[in-house]
Figure 1 (cartoon, rainbow, N blue to C red):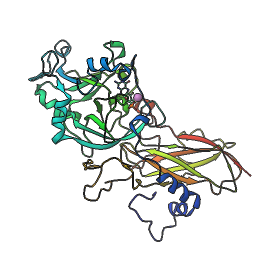
Figure 2 (figure 1 turned 135 degrees about the vertical axis):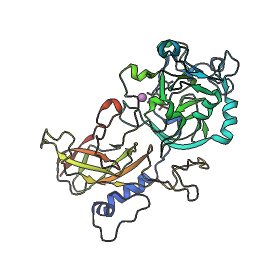
Figure 3 (figure 1 turned 90 degrees about the vertical axis):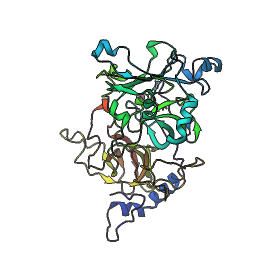
Figure 4 (figure 1 turned 180 degrees about the horizontal axis):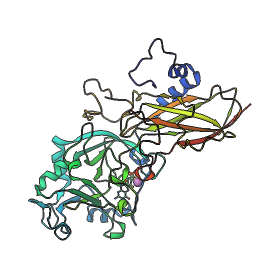
Length: 407
Ligand SMILES: Nc1nc2c(c(=O)[nH]1)N[C@H]1C(S)=C(S)[C@@H](COP(=O)(O)O)O[C@H]1N2
Ligand SMILES: [Mo]
């Protein structure tokens, strides 16, 4: 077991974690990595975006006109007019909120709800198609259900789909959906789906999806639609989203747990060992361990072990949440599922839907050329890429880098 934040090593244990901890290379790397910023400034996220022109690059006047500034933002929530034709049993809202009806939901309305309903939680954003996570933020928002309740759904509410500003061009639409129950109730341990307006204590900027974006905490990034302007409530049982129509996701893409190398050199001298470093994305399965393995690249691995399950993996050391993880960001009102309000400490570490760093050392590697691999083990004991090895539900392949150890 890698050492967690609050776990002292057992006195009689001479297991790998302790041995690694004595390695000065590892110690130095931990000290260095602990100083690195934990939160991603909103301008430094990697963007996954569509739109020609991109909504946040429109001139200010135009942004005001189309509701992409806080002063003019409007959210419409209404029942799908196609329900009748498609299901014969339309969803009914007693109080749809629309521009035509003169009662669309405004930013002021959102702030009024925020007074009593705002929540703040950490979330790592990852794209199910990309290798590296896009960034981690402290997101603030109002649960979607609290806004939905204002529309007074009466019956035949089966799901919602929602989309953002798309230059009034159907080709540019980016849409996603959620089942009805996921909006109304958070399963045990789940954080609420929110209409998000702040990140890291700042107003959400246009690049990050502002003035308001959806944030679905346990899911890959595509569920967190930016420039949100419309939520459609429906009785349809297949509320296909943009990615579903592109055969690009499996609808319920919870974040996967996986390990990645970071900042790895290509060469090392056998006499001066270096740190092997990386990050781990902590998905719905949590994270028990990160392991690594150096395979001499002239020694092929048996084909009947495609996930290298029988390889001599070694444990790495997982870093605790850095003491000053919040930097200058105020941390009052952190979600109680993530942090204990009395102590300010995380309830679990590594924390689901966030990330951590890990370290090992090349100490003892003989000269030669290696394929280095790392993998995560989740709290149920599943070794990456299991339990969900299929690409469409999010990437989980075992990461590999090459390393030449010189004499
Ligand atoms: N309106 C809109 N929202 C969107 C997208 C988009 O193209 N348009 N991309 C989605 C995808 S696929 C991902 S992975 C995340 C990326 O979030 P980020 O750009 O804040 O990192 O935004 C999602 N929200
Ligand atoms: Mo994505």
